[in-house]
Image (cartoon, rainbow, N blue to C red; front, side, top):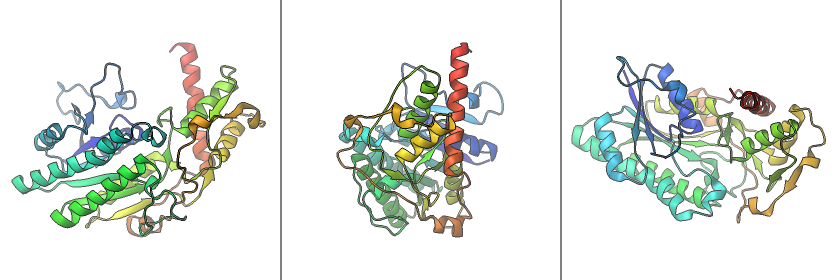
Length: 335
């Protein structure tokens, strides 16, 4: 039975990755940070009492800033695969906490790679490594972007991800580590964090529809992104790790839509046509350096992995609006 270690397991991607691996028969170990409030809502349905025989899901306290703890866990678990999905992942916030973002998002990757190198040299056993790279690395590079497009990051987050990307490539070339980069374009779902723009939009639309809020405050409505459905992107990550040789892949839909289009689609699905009456622009949500247009060229993933996005833009918006609508109903019932 394969063993996998997932960083960022309490996040959107980590929770979907855990489900996929458990369904494929893996034993799944997850890295979580200690917090005084519960932060495991996305994986609570997966939790298994460790005292029961045959448990396949385990959680371990740790932090991407703690190299010693990461090394200890890797030597203890001895995973076949590591899916590194953890990071300070909010682009706008990275401008406010750039040093922390660099340490966790950039150096966190290097700490894991060093632990893998040490483990392989001491034990002779191999560990496959997946690095969650990001389309934010492309920044202002001309669209569409593929695996050969030069990076031009426009945020501390993007810069940190470029460092992590090249660290993965370097350790692959220098030490023979099976390291892959999944350059994932924006991928959303009902599990998306509530401060990310898509989820912020769908939650606000539902609350406005219910009469609980009057306005939705946003920044740049003209920014264009390639949006897909997160569970499908985690399937792509797994496929990368099953290839005979490690490589890097762009994952996206090949379509681009503006933030304004997402807003319009969300309001329309909720039955509100005059969406501009409810949206206000707040300058504090603009980035110091904006990324105007991201669109994936995922041909390589289709040709080599047999992967392509299935969920279309309008369907993605509907999935998220419907989920937030249902969540609000449950909350109002006090269930």
